[in-house]
Image (cartoon, rainbow, N blue to C red; front, side):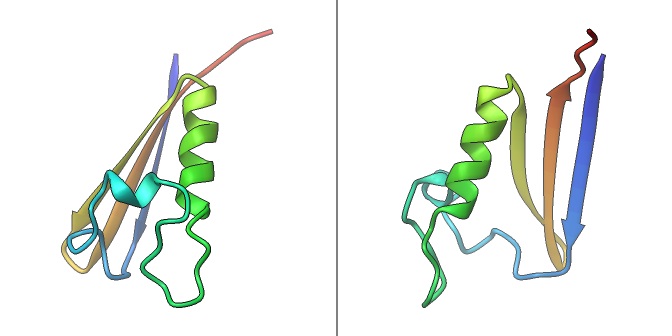
Amino acid sequence: MTIYLTIIDNGMGFDKVNKVKMTTPYFTTKKKGTGLGLSIVTKIISDHNSTILFNSIKDGAKVEITLPRYYD
């Protein structure tokens, strides 16, 4: 079984950002940003054998996370 999580917002989207660079540590588009947020999230997702996709949509962004569902 798989768990699918979709997050949609009405922010600036990802059109103007290089999607490969944005998950690199210390890459930021903000004046006071550290550039660690998405790199940490991507690492956690990867460590759990999961995937994360970043997509621009009309008037915002959509992030799709796919997680395997484990049973004890």
